[in-house]
Each structure stands twice: as structure tokens, then as C-alpha cells.
Length: 461
Image 1: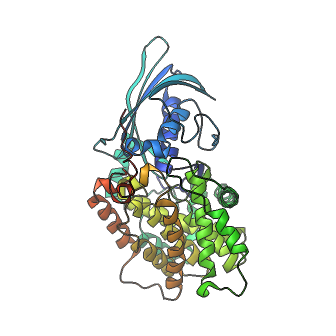
Image 2: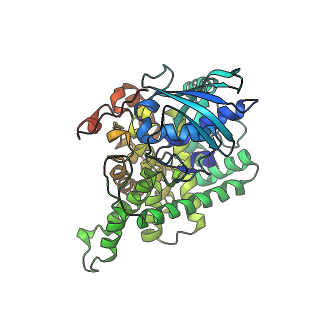
């Protein structure tokens, strides 16, 4: 089934799409699958969900999902709040009811995927309602059952089997460029035609994208206003408000070596990812760990490119979504699967494509922009210190945003022809992720995570 831009850009909570939003959705889906609301539920968190689950708020998200909280309804002040110790066993109530829960964290992954949740449930009389039900958090807040995961694996191996329910099915850059060449349509126009078929009306997608852009701007506003220290124990201070003050007070003659726009891109990215690290409301774009890149580049376009009306924000997001779909279908957007090249790399690639498109780039140039940005994130590891989406994640979004703008500029100054295609880089990213050691894939057991004297995030209970 073709992925929709509505699914790719979803509004949820921080700090992680795969470790917070996904587990909450999995818990909700499990409870909804039962005929009776349970009295007791046991959840085994496996692999990366256990290794960095405390720092990512996986434990909190899972138990809140069991009692009916969703990524769009839960707020940062719902107890237990992010950063509070959560007992392995306890009792919790929420919008759907109340139950006893048991959380077991096992950092040994199941063979099929590094992010797995296994649910068992009983009624008040001790009768088994469900046993060994598996869900997988596959990145970007997407969740799959075991059967769906197996089907998806088969789909990646046979990407040419297109979904004929949309008028312009594509799964690779080669497919998409051929459609644009044959029809004369832009990438955004191809996407919107498919969205109309998926939802029955293109306006459904356009309204959602408007809401997404509004949410991104709200997130930046919140991040620019909030001061203090981020939760989790690393004592990371929010920097966005101070940077904003500095930029506002900058002397008009100070052009910072001709790079004033770069400081603003950094600012917007920091604001978003500091909000994400605090458990605030963000847009998965395509993940939470990389949530600041696309908003930062869109704010850059609004401030420095000009005339950034609704039509241009929609074109930006539709074009970005097309690239995100190609990456997700042929590689991964999950740090636990392929490292941060799948998160920051994907977001930077998507942002470069969107910016290139709204600045008049041809489909070939757009693909070149996406390729450049992703190519120069190949091999990027996911090694969050303390299992928290803070170091190096927050700064990494600022770098990814600047890289996206530069990739778009390089592509716009070329003709779109390039020896390396976007498909080449996407497949290389997938292969690199397969070869990458597990300790560099969102387990906090290697890289920077072990260099700063902070305890390894590995947790069992």
C-alpha cells in the first residue's frame, strides 16, 4: 500500500518517534484488538526499545498508551511525566480505563527487528485475553504486526510491485522521475494526485499539510520561548532563547562573514529539537530525532527566499514526502535499524528536495538535491548519550538543516545530471546500515554515548 504524506508527517510528542510515538501507538492498537479491556497487561520491550527506553520515554509512552492516551491527546504534564522514575510494576488509569501493568526490558533484540514490543493480557479473573502478541516500531512512529513486518520485508525485496490503487505508483527515484518526464507534472503534482486517490479528496492531504506547517511553527515558537535545563540528567541547557536574543541584538553591520542565514537555520533547528527533548509537541519529519531539519529549512525559505504562502509550504512538504517515501520503502528512517543516516540523513534529503522544488528546480534537480544531502550523511551513527535525544541529536539537526540548504543550492546551480542517483544512495544507505555494528544503532553502547562519562543506557528489569 502506498504511503501517504499524511502518515509520513504526523503530529505527536517527543522525544522519539520510534521509541515514544511508536510504542504508544502499538499499545493503543493492542488494547483496541482485545474484546475486553484488560485488568492486567505485561509488556516485554526488546532490543533498542529496552537499551534506550528510559531516556527515550518508551516506558512512559507504552503504559500511557495502554490506558488510552494517544500521541495527539497526551500532554507533557500527564503523569508520569517524562523523566520521572517508572516502576516495573504498577497501576495506572487513563481515558480508556485502569489496569495493572508489568514492564520487562530486555536489550537482546528479536531476530526480525531491533524495536519489538510483546504483549500479554488478562482479565480480572485471571483469564488470558492475549498472549505473545508482537508489534514492531519501525521508525517515524509507524508500527507493524509480525505479519505486516513480513509483508513489508517482501515488499522491499520486490519494490516493483506497485500499488495500482493510485494513478502514479512509484517506489524508486527512477520511477518518479519517469512519471514526471512522461506527464510533465512536478513531483508535488504527482504526489497530490496519488493523495487524492488514497483519501478520496486531495483537500484531506492539503488540510493536513497546513496543520503540519502550523504545528511546526508553533513548535519553533515554543522552543524559542522556553528556557532552563532539559530533563534526563545530562544537564543540557536550552540554547535557542539565548541565540535568538543574540541574533536580534546583532549589529546590522555584522554580516558574520556573509553567513547570517546559517545562524537562523541553526536557531530554528535547535528550538524544535529542544522542544522534542523536553517531550513537547513536534511533527515527525520523518522522525522525532530529526524533527528540526524540515521546519528549520522551511523557516529559512520563509525568511530568506520570500513569498512563502500556503501553496509553497504545501509544495515543499509534498516534494519532501515523495523523497521520504522512496527512502522508507527502499531503506529505513529508523535509527535503530540503520543509524542516524536514516533519521538526520533522510530529513536532510527531504528538506533539500523541498527547498529545491520551491525555488524552481526541475524534477532532475530536485532528485540531485536529495541525493547530495543523503550522500553526505552516509555512515552517520546513532549514539545518543545516556539514551537521551539530546547529545549529539540536537546539534545534529542544525547541521542537517544547513547541509540541506547547501545541497539544494548545489543542485540549483547544476542541470540535474549526476553520476550518482538518489536510488544509488538510498540502497547504499540500506547496505551501510546492515553492516553497521549494533552499538552504533540507537543502543547507546558505542560512539559518543560511551565517551562522556555518562552511564551506558542499557537497562534490564
